[in-house]
Figure 1 (tube, chains in turn green, purple):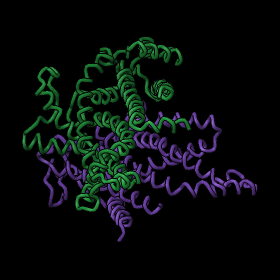
Figure 2 (tube, helix red, strand yellow):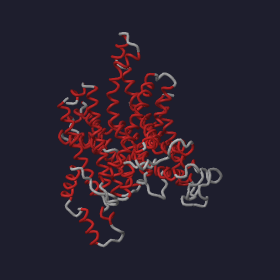
Figure 3 (tube, rainbow over the protein chains, first blue to last red):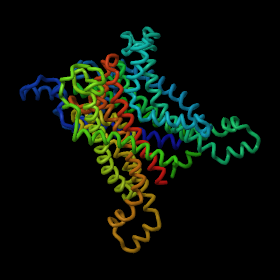
Figure 4 (cartoon, rainbow over the protein chains, first blue to last red):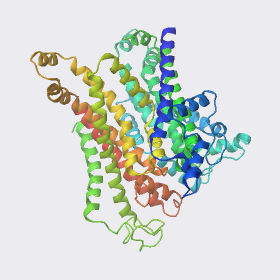
Length: 318
Length: 264
């Protein structure tokens, strides 16, 4: 386990570094001068030169990269070109929206998908097996923002049960209001995400249900439910955990789009605004935090998978 | 009818309805795309089958034009992703151990970079346009296709008939064309079909965020964004593009599913 941990940590650090390089290079190589964001249209050459010096974009690329890397390592993500506020602070201010949204949506999606997926596999011969399949098939084809739009229309605009969007300005000062604001976005993401999860859970369960060891357990007198809970669940969990880690990352990104449906002040809104205003430090900061999150979640998922199924530790060497 | 052909035919039917609408839009449109004579937010029915939008443009016309963008995205992204992905996968599959490992790590990192984030990053630098969106989505797709191709190529290369071909003195390029490509093609093509559905969804999300096809071109994602503000007075505008989108994506998914089952 320790050997695997070391190797996997090295890969994580390597990917984080490569992701940082890729992020930096892509944003610098692409056309568009960050200095333009600071200046009015038709600025003189001297003004552009001064703005570049102020931003540090006149230095050689390598020294720019090293400066940036040093800043990032000391948790300094620079300042927004528009608001001049520190990017790190703004991200920290938006996490209380995005993190609860992502985690709640993820938990709800798992709570929906695991029982439904197992049921679809165990009762494939009943009428609801195919119905669950069809609904899941529909679910993966529906864009999350449209689900959000439909839910807002029904539950906020027509029935007036929940707010249509926005978040209390004092954040979690009034927890009830904050929770109310997050219910529809959470349900939106969870519904879309559970559709693809159901398919994985169903496939993993079907594999296990047809496995020899389950037939043996049944032959030794275990009831179908007991046999599945004692022997099947852990085996079915292995492929599902790998998918879960990926899905958690997807939820986080799904939040980017869904936040804009509900005008939530989260990371997604920050990124979209940063892109439309060509605010490079903001784009870089949010992208870096998002990518790091995705990579760390993948790392944790791989570890969790090996805790559930230690056999993988020995297979990984190949 | 078997389950497999049911999926395939239902999927093809849905895709053909959308493709039919797109082809129709090139020979006939109910109104000119920028004809605003219908009045703002006219209800569905009468001349305007689905009503008009807030600028008075005919919604059905926009829906047909949005179909061009959706189909164009699917074809464009699959072309970019397929060409880049298969080429990279082939090279990695043939490369030396060291180079192959390096490519595998880079691909894993690229895949960890989710499609939408990569697309937003590219849009951030290159500006929002349909071409940028399609290229970005195709690039993200290429990483997935390359990883699949690499594994498949390695499987094929370990087969005895490749050794036999080598012994017979056939050159590598010839072997790729005669043996490798035909053997990996079915699996890669099915994967590309699945990716096409995802590409359409990704373009819609980008356009919804205002980072895809810029106005006045009516991408379905863009139409949904614009319909959101007037959803209570003009619900059809918020339903029709969504239904069209889901129809196309389900159609593509079912077709890919049916093909996958018949490949096996």
